[in-house]
Image 1: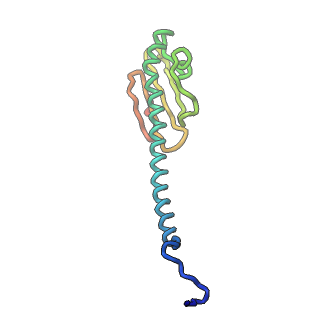
Image 2 (image 1 turned 90 degrees about the vertical axis):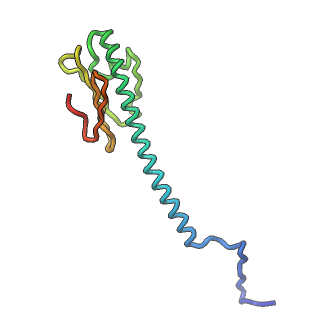
Image 3 (image 1 turned 45 degrees about the vertical axis):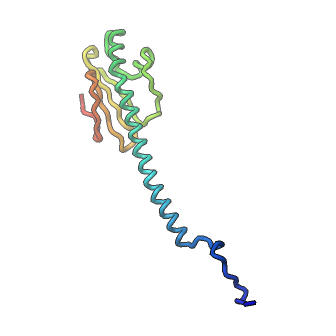
Length: 141
């Protein structure tokens, strides 16, 4: 029987992780999490913009129906929601929506979507149905 001063050697099957191995695993998890968060934010931004564009594209046929029904274009998106059922739930996207018909409501209208948070595009649409986007802001009609 051999005595080693009370210290027993561990068997290879009982050996745990070293501090270095744990640090490497934590570093890899941190890198993967950083990539996942940035990708998630990019997807979320594109989703917000897609919802805003979809909502604004619905204004074109809704405005034409409004014109047929009332004889002039609507000058607020709230006017399009009730009689024509253009659906939008306020607060679901970080945008402020605005429709203006100017002085000649029979011939012309335009709408804007202004982001309430940074990093999103501004959008502009008019009676032609062409939707424009810009990072610096929508063009003036």
